[in-house]
Length: 181
Image (cartoon, rainbow, N blue to C red; front, side, top):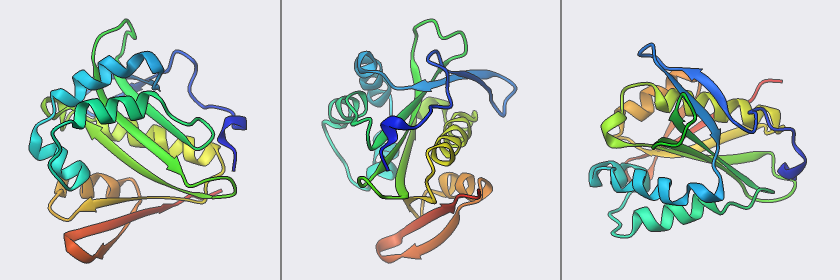
């Protein structure tokens, strides 16, 4: 599957999405010039949240992750960011990433991270819902991810979004969502 030929769902400016708390955010594709904003977002994440995201402590997490997400291979991965609903600069509140192994794959792995001080406001749902729509539009059959069993809010969210959870070794769950035509 070559994603570069897929028709994107989001406009170039992004799409305004309602949050559970009644507010709105803008969800758009990550851009190369987002690297400093992504770094700032990751710097505001609590070390405990970083651990839940990558299953380890990591000193240079902000630099490594910001660079990786701002410089994607568009043929096999996408990243969506949540920002202010006005779209006029400002902070990145969260990011969701989807990566496909290579040409011909119809499955992809996702990851998501929300700024620690903004968890529980619906940014994760907004990003994951948009990511699921992108996966469907790109013809994927399934998306999956790995979540620590102790990460109850994330497990609850993916469960509500229709993912099936299977406990695997080491206190980790693999979650999968099969796309419907």
